[in-house]
View (cartoon, rainbow, N blue to C red):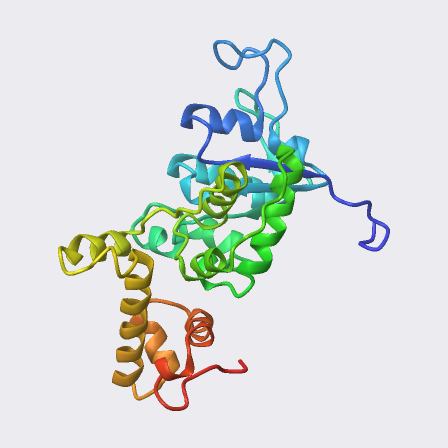
Amino acid sequence: MTQANRPPRKPGRFNCASIPESLIDAELFGYEGGAFTGARTRGKPGKFELASGGTLFLDEIGDMPLNLQASLLHAVQNQEIVRVGGVSPIPIDTRVICATHRDLQAQVETGQFRADLYYRLNALELRMPALRERDDLAWLADQLLERIALREGLPERPVPSSLRARWMAYDWPGNVRQLETALLRFLISGDERLPETTATKHLHAGAGDHASPATTTLQAHLDRERDAYIRRTLADTDGDKDVAARRLGISRATLYRELRRRPPTLAPTGLGASSE
C-alpha cells in the first residue's frame, strides 16, 4: 500500500511513568493466557498490537526501566513483539513517538538509558520550549481561559492588565499545567495569587525589614531586582544578547521579551525593544 492511499493512522498512548514496573511489559506487549497469576485465560493484546496500523505515543520514555528497554528496542527496530508468556513473534506496523522531560543524552552517559535505543528513537527531535521561553503566553492564556470556562461551566472573568503583566513576568516552573491551574483558580474565585518560585522566596526571605509594605509590593520589588540584574548582565557583556541570555539562564527569545516589556531606559543604549 502506498503512502498516498494509506488510511489515517489510529492513535494510542502509554505513560511509561504511570504503570508499575512489573506490569509495563504486559501492558506494552500483551500476554498469553495463564502467563502469570491473575492473567486472563484468553490473554490480552498490548499497546503495540492495539496501535498496529497507527501511532503509539510513549510519554515519559525517560522513565522506562532499563531492563525493559531491550524489548522496546526490538519492537521498534524489527516491528514485531512477543507477548509475555508467548514464544511466537507477532508482526506489527506501529509508528512510535516519544516524549520526556529528562535529558536522555545525560542518561545514556550515566547508563540509565540504552544508547542503541536512544539513537533508534531519535530520528527526529523536537524540543518543546518551556512556557517561560515562549512568546505566545498571553494568547495561550486567553485560549485556556475560554476552554476552562466552557469545560467547567464557569462565567468568564475580565483579566486585569496588572495580572496579565504578572503572568508574563512569572517563570512558570510547572509549565502549562501550572498555568491552567492558576487560570482555573482565577475563574472560580478571582484569586490572582501566583506561587512563589525558588528565586522569589530567596528575595523575599532576604528583604527583612528593608522593604516597606506601605510603599511597595513584593511584585514591584521583584520587578526592580529583575530589571537591575538584566541591566547589569547586559552591561557586563557589552550588549551581546546571546552571551547575556546564557549568563541569565534564559533563552534569547525570553530576553527579548523582557526588553520589550520594560521601558527602553532600563536597557543600555541600543538594547531596547527589538523587532526580532
